[in-house]
Amino acid sequence: MATIKPFKALRPTVELAPKVAALPYDVVTTEEARELIKDNKYSFLHIDRAEIAFKEPINLYDPRVYEKAREKLCAMIEAKVYIQDKKPCLYIYQLEREGKRQKGIVTCTSLDDYLNDVIKKHEHTLPIKEQDRINHVKYTQAHTGPILMTYRENREITSIVDDWTLSHTPIYDFVSSDKVVQTVWVIDDDRTIKKIVDLFAGVGAIYIADGHHRAAAAVKVGLAERAKNPNYTGNEEYNYFLSVIFPDTQLTILEYNRVIKKLNGLGEKELLEKIDKKFELIYKGKEAFKPKTKHFFGMYMGGQWYGFKVRPNSFNKDDLVESLDVSILHNLIISPVFGITDPRTDDRIEFIGGVKGVEALTRLVDSGQMRIAFALFPTPIDDLMKIADAGLVMPPKSTWFEPKLQSGIFIHSIKE
Figure 1 (cartoon, one colour):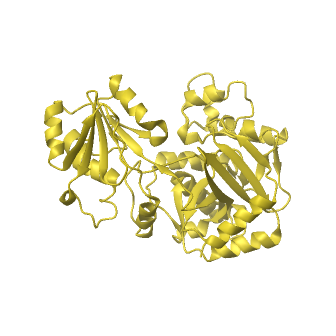
Figure 2: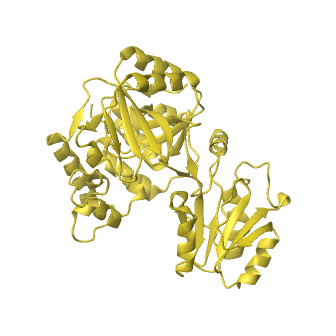
Figure 3: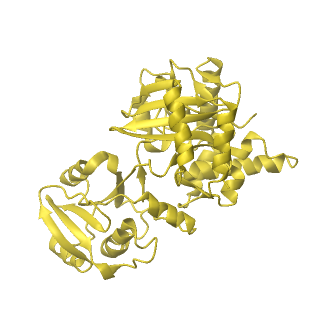
């Protein structure tokens, strides 16, 4: 039984929403943020990447950065850049990229659902990144970045969402900086809200697709607030956190490719011989090899593309995690051949989201920045859900969801 809750969103005025909306903090570097906010004092990056306010270099986790984020948010509210809905509502958030649309419900999900595993996870969190988001929530007293969630599609919920969008005018409809059409509707009808809430109560599980650190931080802040208020009722806003929930049939996962700086002392011929023991070579040429199905891999090295198919007995096909392509590549090549055992911390490997295309892989290798690149097939959403259902964890950098949810369109205050 999944609990969702309508809320009084803090959201930008219609006129300023296109200027406020920004890519999430964790896909934009400090330098990129500085470039993106030029001539735009309204960008949410002033809050999400508050270090850009300082001329001198500053540690990203310095308390002054979080204080600046709070100051900027308060100033935008004071200046009426943000308004707050007068009653709790649900919202429909539609993203359209390259002709494909996905429509999700913007709502608050339950801290207790997270603790009781109604909200399923598939990733470990890093303490330093978790603490960063904890500090951000504590200082701003708000959830400012929505967590991307999914569920096995309920046709009745989809029908209600579709009917609402066809019969009501959106409050926002604009193209964001990443060329994605952002459209938002407010669901303010109490009967419709109750119907959606009741239908989600029949949904067995909700899955975190992207935003594990934000979710974990929101829960820890909520638990700290409970500890300070032992007579809490459970209705306080800190018991819920900002989420956007899409049906699994509408989400798009792109591949998360790998590039490696060094060949670990191997020559190209020797490297190919090692790969041949576990994989079958099926292509060699100048044209990029982009896998079209699971268990196929592309590799670019020395100006040549190679296509490989993993040999059937090289991995445990009955193991949910070990049979993932990211696991196969790591266990059969990246770890034994290149000696990279921990991809989270080893600076010899980098990860390239599929949104950048295979062209990014060839450029990195041809420029000499990297020696070899691997192209993967995207992890299917069903694999993610099965792994989460089993209480297992996926390897790092297994999924790249596209398009990204914009930050700054919805804010959930935990002060009310």
